[in-house]
Length: 294
Image (spheres, rainbow, N blue to C red):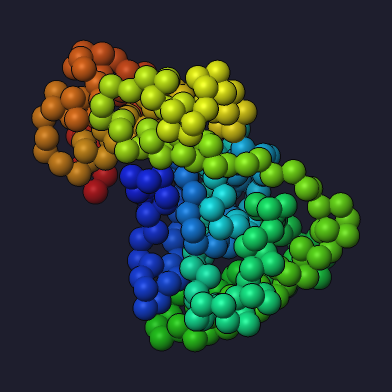
């Protein structure tokens, strides 16, 4: 499956509904890269094949075959393959806190969920079988995936995640005793500016416009983008426009020239040049190939 991102830069979690706020995704990263995004849902992942690198504004994490990891709520991150290594295939378990916590301010939420969700030290935690808790966590991850291939396993799924959450709490306690990293970059500014770009990419926008959305100077805007996602605001804007164009090419029959204008490009020839540099093929070829793959 492909990861979709909403206009407010939150990841759009497919198959996750209010009556059952859990989703299982099997993601082949062979020909794709997960863009910078964040989501309210919590996430457990297992690397079924290959290797992946998960990058946040604060750190870079490498996970290889049979490794697992947890991603906290609202963590700004991207996921990519590692050059020279086998492309990754990741099984992801995404769920809203209410799935385990039940009603608002329940004992499950206040005593068990909030200590992790509100922990600013914790963005991602890996499981590589280095201790008993990690070995058990990897076992549970495999059990959880196996449950999703059966019918009527909603209760078992929630029970398994509850057991994994207790293991996560124990692992966090062990990590803190061993000097768990305390630094976590404040993401509010970069998230505000990325959201502004998402909502206005079709229009002509300036560095000053982007900076104003987070009430910072142009210089601080540049510094924030470089420090957090290692790109300039313009590079990020251009990449997002290309991703929006790719979606329209795949999913609609809108003429290429119209797609260029709808995604913020004022010149069709320039759009074609930028698209080919980014994707290795013309917009027309991309549309044709994407439909042949269906």
